[in-house]
Image (cartoon, rainbow, N blue to C red; front, side):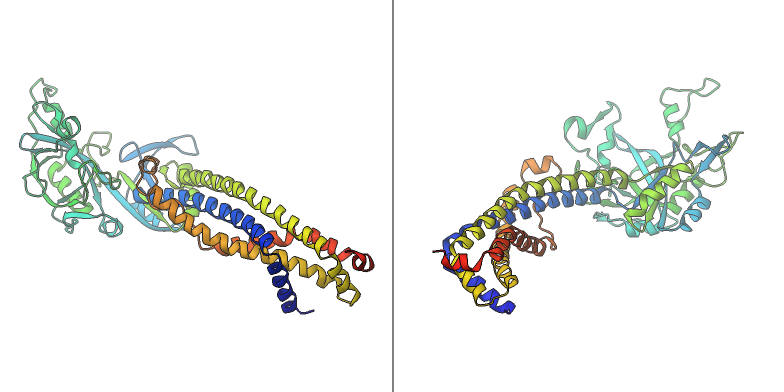
Amino acid sequence: MKIFDLLRMSISNLWKRKLRTVLTVLGVVIGITSIVVMVALGNGLKQSMLDNYANYSSMTQIQISGGGYYFSSNSGSGQTEEKRLDDTFVQELLGMEHVKEVYPRLNISAIAKVGKYAGHLDIYGITKEEFETMNVSIGKGKLPDSDTKLQFFYGNNVLTNFYVEKTNVYSFWETGVAPDIDLMEDAIFVIFDTDAYWRSQGGSDENGNPVKQPKKYLIEACGIMEGELGEWNNNNSQSVLCNMEALKSELKRIFKKNPIPGQPTRKNGKPYNELFYSEIIVQVDDMANVTELTTWLKDSGYNAYSSAEWIQQELDTMNMIQAVLGAIGAVAMLVAAISITNTMMMSIYERTKEIGVMKVLGCDIRNIQGLFLMEAGFIGFIGGVVGVGFSYGLSIVINGLVAGSEATASMGISGAICRIPLWLSPLAIVFAIVIGMIAGFIPSLRAMRLSPLAAIRNE
């Protein structure tokens, strides 16, 4: 008997018992819908978490830093060696396997003065190459584009670091009112020698003489990051960005032969000729290689950190949650499988004589088994298709109900909470067919083993 004939007979037999077929298919629909929606919820939570992490830090980046611009570590010989983040180390990193890009950064602290306000500036000198890769939304102006002229690009939350100098009241944090400062238009005077500045606040030198305030420098603003005050857009929201080479030139011009705050000095107190980096960002080709490279850097004595380590732990937790949710849905599918088995057993009892006639006429017992397996599989197929359709509809309803709610916002969930991946729909249909055929296997064995004469005599 041809497969097409078996399929036609299966559909005909199911159509004769429409109510029972519909109720059985309904059980499969509920089971498949439960599985798909539960897995989609777990997938939505995981994807939302990854989206949130991607907004704040790259999952393929490693940050190398130290206590200052250099730090000490114990070498293998037990001696203490000094690890510095310099151009030599940058070139070494660029030559390593799996390393795509290396971005050194020079970080300094400064004091800003404008009108009655003073503020703390966290300044980062960044290379041109890194500026090109940064996903910074510009609210006003532009990014720094000069290697020679120092220009500041302010984060949208820099104003929160300003306070009224006479009262030491931080306008935004204590009153909720933004300082009356226009970073683009007002004259911003910057004090780079912070050590001298703090000594001048009531301190004195080694001879007991009052310390004069260090010189202030007028630094031009080139742009401001997009975003409202108090809104955290990314890791640079409270930072001041500038061109690396321009910052180096300005610091060397200001301090000349004097030590720069935060930079290491020789034993005699004199500064080094070169400036050492505060941190280095390493861009790795794939997240799978981040942990290995981070471990190597730590073993080599460097202070290395990557978000991939704890992100992977979070992903493992989310995968466990997704598996648990899928298992809960599978319980409904188990009930549906029992329903299919019951339906097929009832069908055999009702069609005992029909089975006997088919055997007497010489029908292969494998065809008889195949007929019942095909009926069970067809029930699974219909239930799977309808269940997947219901899942998409239910997913839209769930996303509509929770979109923008305070509960999801407090959990850090953004976007759709129920996301059905492309691979899940066809897999769910195939799964429903397989479960249907497995559920129909035992009844099909009973049909195959029926005695022909006993079946014909049965009424």
